[in-house]
Image (cartoon, rainbow, N blue to C red; front, side):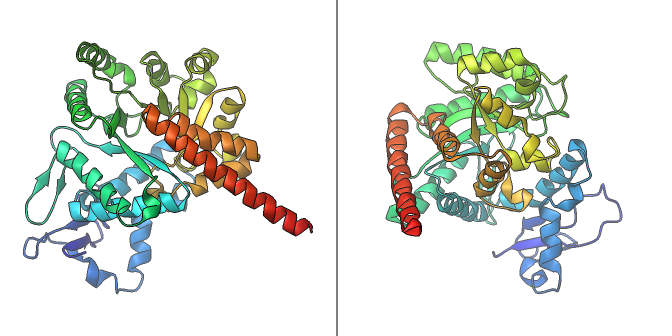
Length: 389
């Protein structure tokens, strides 16, 4: 794209910024030292391969623990942050996101969208415009409506966002971000469906640090009749002292992102999850790449599911890990957990049952999915009969 530059200078000081491979947009004449036009660099031998290695996780994390893997992961985010805040690029990114997941067979998509106070998640362009808060939400809607208009086959696809901030935010900033999310929920009640705090869990704030903020906001919403479900990013840890999931359960999260450590280590937490019907969003490849599990075969998700915990299968920053969509996550656990057709149907249907769609949308979506599932089985049975004959 026009105005795209890459910082392509070897660092003498690894702590210096920007990192080699940092991508950003600048007007000609405002380009900082060390940045070169992407259109020029792409013709250089080895550039594409080296850049891909800098902006995706790869075998270099294989021998690291989760903390080391997160260091690599954080470096990737630092390199792509500038390009992801450029609104014209981000719209193209969203269009591709819808294409990829539609091609993977999805009919509903929920994205955690980083939108907060103090410029968090703001979008910009080369003309000096800035989009914040509700304007960022409107950008997601604009991209989705544009994509839906491209083909009649997109008409049954649904899309929602979960407004998110970072776990690095102190409680006061967290309160401001949550207040913004509540305002966005009021403005876009059918599109903004929840709130979350993302980022590395073990090195950032505990959910307990935010409990007062959550409880106060719940009381405020109760008075005004507003609802904003919490889909908290908790339990992505190997630390038995990490009790974030305990607080997530007590806060009545309908779904918990990752959620595998306390549910696995502490039977009382697991029993409460089952009693409340809370679903866990299992992200298999992410959990393995970030070294929370050694292999998919040993992933606690399968034991939790067999014990009656409701789970869904999701991806988590797949582009950073060098793949797209959710098919690889599904294929990985199908092989590792020896899933049969009945298990696959349950997991697929769970994605809609535990979605943030309203009741009318959910009923319509499940009915449409059932029709497609039955059509698939009929085609499969016909193929099998043909092979037998």
